[in-house]
Length: 402
Image 1: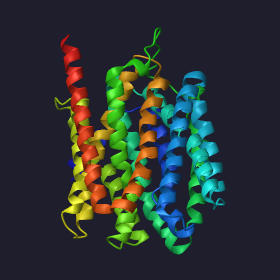
Image 2: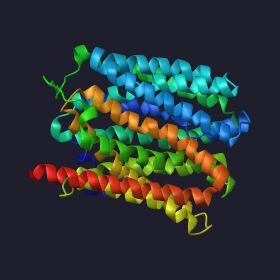
Image 3: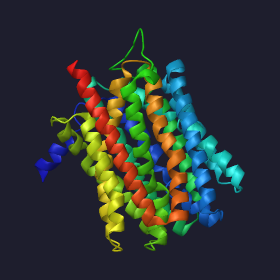
Image 4: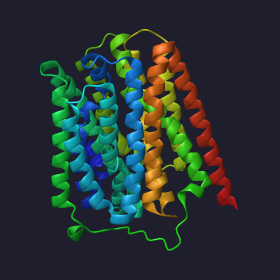
């Protein structure tokens, strides 16, 4: 057992001090994002919105994410990642606290749009910062450490969120989310000031290529949009499925979602280190992750047994563990050809677009077609995602041969 624990710790060896601080800041920030998994329940139960209304609010959520990611990438290339991260965290904290006082449909659409615009400016800036703070050989593991922080926060967040809802109310979630964002900003200002932080990989391209002309990157982005649409069902339609079809309580839903983050915290870093030592390419590994995630929806229609929810969560979790770190590392590697902010903004935007399409489409489909048919359609989208990743893998292999 001691040897196993030592080997686990060794998977973190060699990562820079700045990356560890960035992971801690991300952990503080994400621990407060307990509002998001319960947002659909809050809107339907506390504000009495219809599923169709919730779908449109989720689209506003995604549209704000798109604009914020684009703006964050532009500002990162203009003023630097540090300032963007600080302003984003402070602004998000204030806006999340204010959002609890909005109760109309139009008001909530505008409010969630503004919150996500400011919040997702943080994402491309974080990717560029992480790349700057990492040696080239450590980038995938640095990505994984940041993801571990995100998922550790998510594992605690939903469970604590369910407890807060049970004992207090939904309103408390907005306060916790806002305050943790502000705390994360304070920590960032104190520990990652550019004057005292060492940059390990400062990429400067004299004649940068436009990410919009990179055909392989565009195929990759399309695949990531589809993957995002599939994955995000676990944070919008899936909680409703758990509650309406399997009659789980908010606390049980929080624990089930929290299991995802806990498993990632325990297994992802050793898994990524092991996969890095195999001969598989990043695109090949992304393909495997997409297959597992699509299967997590397919199995739900096999039986009404409640245990299948755990099976589906396990498939999705391992699919996510493989797909996200290597897709992120692929984007960072590709970004060295051009403006890093632009590349990483487009990578972030792919998931923002997924927010626009995925939440609304999932809500509309479950409302009109029911959960079973929705899961079949989501599985079909997974098959298209796998096909696009196969095309990307083949194109890159042919490019190497030339």
